[in-house]
Length: 429
Image (cartoon, rainbow, N blue to C red; front, side, top):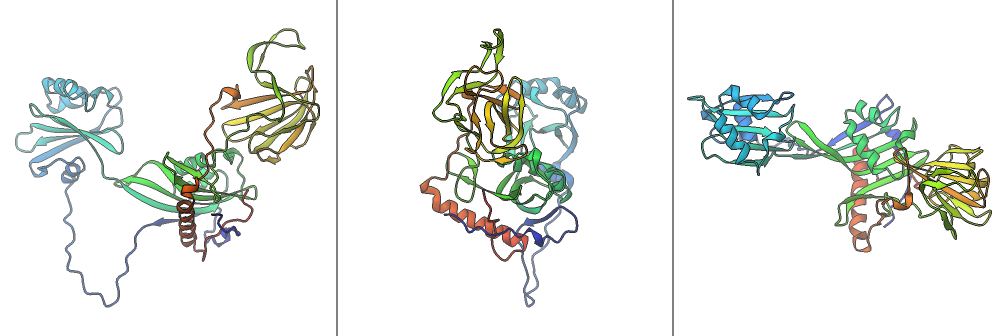
């Protein structure tokens, strides 16, 4: 299943600025030079009224007129409709009898609405409200009328972008005409392998993604189908695949990008003291929060990083002794205290299982152990109580399908980038 790994050809970029090349992937039609002239008539353009009626599946537009607007701050349904001639009795009916379809108390400022009236006597007929960018509700305002929910027609568009980072990934993508939300989607894909707060100028990428559109507006978040990110000289490929329990991302070998942390930073150890906000400190002889987990082990036992990351501290303090701190991504950071010796330097990239130091008793310690501390979103937490995302690789039953999908996407990205073949950097981690 492993795909050939060769150097990425990002140097074929033709843009003159640090940035991106982007291509929208869509069907193209070429007419042969001897093709007969087309006899098909151009579609009849719809009026603005007919377009709005069509959007909400309302018939008889030729007998209607429409009043449109957006819900204002602090407005309720009565604020919107009463000035337009909708009676209090009708408002009460749609607010109470149609609550199972849509509770009108949930209308929100900024959402569009459209009131369709009879062109003959100006009698209100239908009220349409856009619940979200993809869903709407229509109330029949005539006596005994009902309500229905519907969805706007959507179109899935596939796009491609490649480039070189200059500043933030978000700004680089925006400069190339792509939404900043693509940067968020990409960061979510690589949340367990790349810390996007530390990406560097010159990091390279290529991304194939899809996004839903309603009319001329994109909706929801982009879905990354396939991507490669060259970060600190290493290639991180990602390919989307659904094994039956939801879409997830995997590398070219089928390993999940959701890498679980190791249970402990030392082997053959025991927990000598757990996370406790009111622990009696054995050296200071007073109650002091212990925001970590102590693993007792023999002096000199190797201490390993519980996950991939970058060393952001390799230092010494009176309390911590010799210690190392590793940032894993934008969410998680770990720290290892009381080492006898450090084995890494600040700024060094480490992999899960790399030896970063050795057990000791430096600092405020009564015996050889490592105090393991765990940060989540800037707050120290008990890692033994945390539920981390699973790390499930591609199952054997899906190996062939996944391999075919990867090959197809690599070929598509190569075609869109102008390469002659699918190419990956050969230093995949």
